[in-house]
Length: 377
Image 1 (cartoon, rainbow, N blue to C red):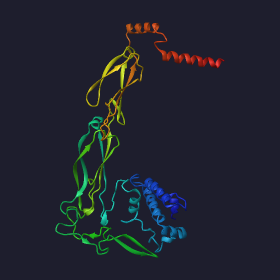
Image 2 (cartoon, rainbow, N blue to C red; image 1 turned 60 degrees about the vertical axis):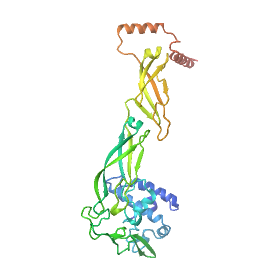
Image 3 (cartoon, one colour; image 1 turned 90 degrees about the vertical axis):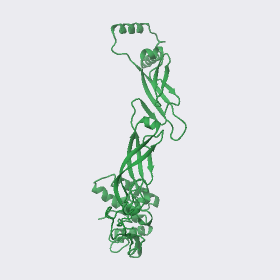
Image 4 (cartoon, helix red, strand yellow; image 1 turned 45 degrees about the horizontal axis):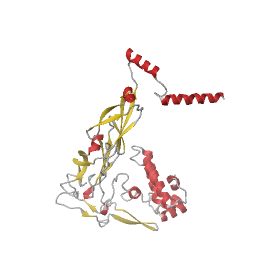
């Protein structure tokens, strides 16, 4: 027994168009085959969700369903054959594209004339932080379908041409009476293309495209951030029989750096310094991402975690003249593997120390003592 369409989408009977669309988007994303590979149950639910939405989004079909239930579409009813006009070249794919557009990567979108637009492609590229800093031009190799050169993408054997489909007269769509209604759907003879091929091209087997590795040049601008997507229009998979190509999307990830951590346009670097440098003051040099060395002065009595800002030494801001800052954070290192003499000197220093030498710890333990005494009171 078929599940109720409203229950399938998870909406109430009085749901409006906006609620239906939102529910369909949520369920379709949940059960989409790309997210559930080799899951027959998810594929079945995915089809049920599309079938339910196709009926409920149409006011006439919805009214018939509310009155007669699934029987409204059986035995020559509105959808014919219990299918509700779902599937085929003009079924759920059209609904899904209407809802999601390019969000899911394009797939087999139709261009004008019913031709199948080529699929969008994804290429994952990893770059270093230095490359994100300076920018670069990268050469990538992408295995993809390209237009067949023998038939110029038509799919017909050289010297011949595709012919206009006799069934749809080149429109790619046909109308059929279904009870009281007239339903338009993709032409079953030409699959919505409007043309048929009687003598296919031997190189591409009538597809109008062949698979081949391509070398492309990709410009990575300075300041690019991790997770950025670069779109190369028309560089995706070639469309069937001369249809437009899809797009190529470059997804960038920036490798973690040994010394620097990035936050937007700012960089952070943690530098260990000795206890004596922190106490007496000193200086050290750091190499920045632009290849220069910058001297950092450490004032006397610097505490662990203190930050020093180097203005203009961070990351460039994408397509802007401004540059971020570099923040140096010192980490005071406690001495280890002390010699006998070093230990004696530190013990002597401890004996000569006063509250003025360690005001934070002295103040903390003084307040802790007051806190303990409050319990006695």
